[in-house]
Amino acid sequence: MKRVIGIGETVFDIIFKNNQPQAAVPGGSTFNSMISLGRTVAKNAKAEVLMVSETGSDQVGDIIASFMEDNGVIAKAVTRAPGTQSQISLAFLDDNNDAHYEFYKGCNQSGLNVSQVENVDIERNDIVLFGSFFAINPDIRDFTRTLLMKARSAGAIIYYDINFRKNYRKDLPDLINNIEENCRLSDFVRGSVDDFDCLFDNTNPENIYKEKIKELCPNLIVTRGDKSTEYFRADGRHFSFLVEPIQTVSTIGAGDNFNAGFIYGLLDADIRREECHCLDETILARSISMACRFSSNVCRSFNNYVDDDFKP
Image 1 (cartoon, rainbow, N blue to C red):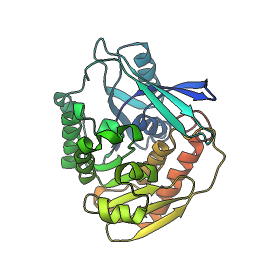
Image 2 (cartoon, rainbow, N blue to C red):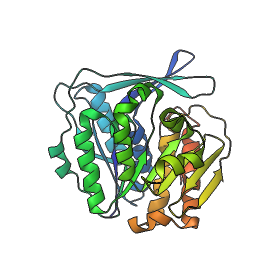
Image 3 (cartoon, rainbow, N blue to C red):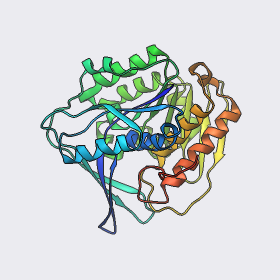
Image 4 (cartoon, rainbow, N blue to C red):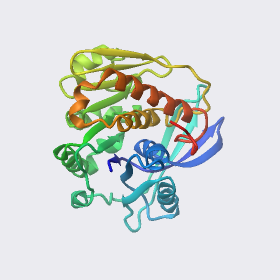
């Protein structure tokens, strides 16, 4: 059976609206995607879903680890070093229900190291999802790079969600090499127009692909909120998909679940890595449509992932 392997942070999200807490749920960019995939592909035995991460050895860490297992996500590769604290995220929703974050983490050294990579099994045509600051964090770069190189050598399909937040922009000169290396190792790169505005001061999807991504990765997905999704392919083709407007409760997890839905589409079509560089147009359209369905579902609640009874 194929595996979907997620590499990323785990946090505990406390969500505020009008300065009042509305919900408290386990989260993290890749984590949100993996829970949605656990509730869909793992639940229906389409693939195994595995998370590679770390969380604290505290009570919050217990909640996060149990939540993964309860939702079909294998947590054996989640490190919980003794004496560590879990990361807390405060998400403040504005009038458009978009989130602005503040992060809190104890002063603990990461428990992730290169020696742990050998414990993660990756096979050809498995799908590896990674992104956010975890993917470029200099403190764990050796671990992340080694794991990605292992995935590339194994012939896995690698999907990179840039998810670059404004609060890291000041550190961009020290991070850009890691971002570019991640793109080189990937088969698909996704970013929102806000991500690329932060990175390159550029919101034109075609220019972003031609000037920044094309030489690094064959496929680029640019999401433009409720306007459209733009897809650029290695053969020079450009596809544009309209997005159906919806009434949102919270946009937390919208991009994460777009990723989950797109990956669901690849799994449903049983895509092999050699097919990724020129993805069949019908499969592409179905995968983008599924990505939008996952994303729309999560925007209708304070949850970071699709409903437990969501039917793809």
